[in-house]
Length: 170
Image (cartoon, rainbow, N blue to C red; front, side, top):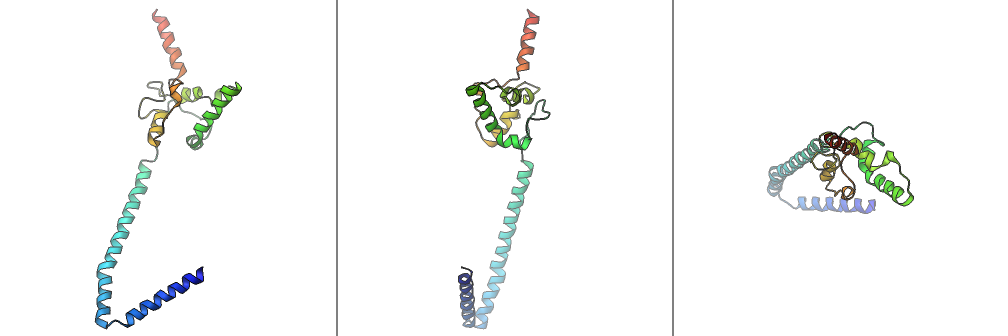
């Protein structure tokens, strides 16, 4: 394959030399002049435009790297944050299957535990605002959240506080 490519390159170089030998000096000078004055600046301009575009893309990924989210209480997560960003849905599905099909409840890996830690301190929810923990990233990635069609998005301790406040008022 390399031999064929090298032979083809040699053939192209020979044909160019034959073409240039057949040209008069003035036409050769015009061709070189055209190449230097027209195509070379065009190539340089294309190079700089491409370079500027790539620089803007690199800058855009740095400034828009991750969405700004309200992490709630936060703290130490059950797994590494990078791992959780990539695999949390698999973890939740596995936990769901373990709980529903086998009756095994692991509080550490439960959705309820995630919400307890990551619900906003402002509204005790992981959805509802652009900077909410779940909704912020899922909007950024354009992924539908279907967990909260059945599950509550609010921190369980907020329900306890609200019910205790209602009992005090009575």
